[in-house]
Amino acid sequence: MRVLLDTHALLWWLVDSERLSVTARHVIADEAHHIMVSAASAWEIATKFRIGRLPDGESAAFDIAGQVASQGFEALAIDVADAERAGHLPGPHRDPFDRMLIAQALARGLAVVSVDDVFDNHGVIRLW
Image (cartoon, rainbow, N blue to C red; front, side, top):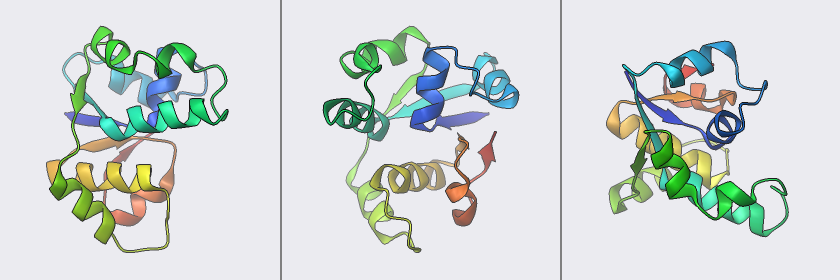
């Protein structure tokens, strides 16, 4: 299965947080699954650390690429089509990071590991 991690799922995986569900933990740990991390998550982590909303995230915020690679995950770039698709998504949800993950998941047929049910409103397969 090809899976895209929501930002919180990535962060919780990296620190082995109990907030990560058992299902999510099994999906991420299963080497048969292809785990991806969007550039949008890197942007979100760095931004939230900079503005003080992720005070314990320094190690992730300054080496996101290294963290992703060390876990054997694939970095997923954002292209112009992704940006256009995210901008045209219907609905009132305003979080640009979530909208990008939704757009990328839909375009590439990826399931998303996330606690956030906003993905359900867009036909994305959400694992939690």
